[in-house]
Image (cartoon, rainbow, N blue to C red; front, side, top):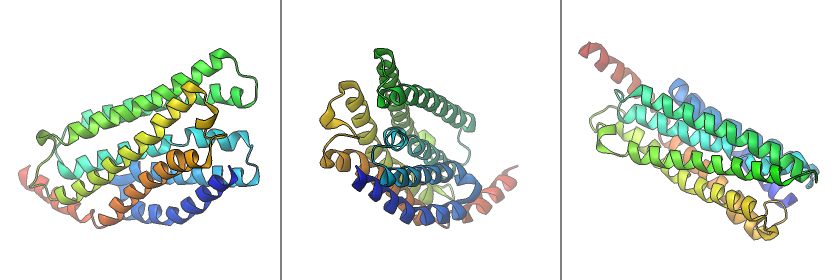
Length: 252
């Protein structure tokens, strides 16, 4: 799998400066999506470096399996940022509840997945460990499903105001999040199927190069790229903050 690890290393080293720039341009309102996306790139760079050095590295292969988690958190954060600009007076508490729910589900999923897969990769796995791994992957898919439902709810007329100063840029962020959700869905559903079936030809470690490129590498890279492009497209989004603050002051 050295080829995939090398591709991860090269692609995410290239993308990281763009993430940092978007992070800087969006500032505090975008800290959740861009901080999480930066973490995702970092995890992929570390995993890629470990894999290039040793393709059979347990840590590198576990990262390959569960490294999608920061990307899902980044998508959730981007939905939150898009909602802020599309409707500054939306229900903030509801958004925070969704973020906490997604983070909690992700934490539980990661704990089960890492605990189960680590023993299996070491050759010490039991049926209980495999069960934990499957449950963990199921929870990660549940996180993705929650994000799909949240995105669809966010598209409803009650959740945006077309006359909001940041509506257009917020909608661009929304497009980026929706595109990323599609690619992330391919990745997490593949992961669940691969773990549940334990088919060697579907394995992210032992499967064919075509499987690993089409179902692992490309969905992740395209999801990250769609977010970055949306971030670059809206690099001047902070200019709307002063307008929104002025409107809030005038209406007070």
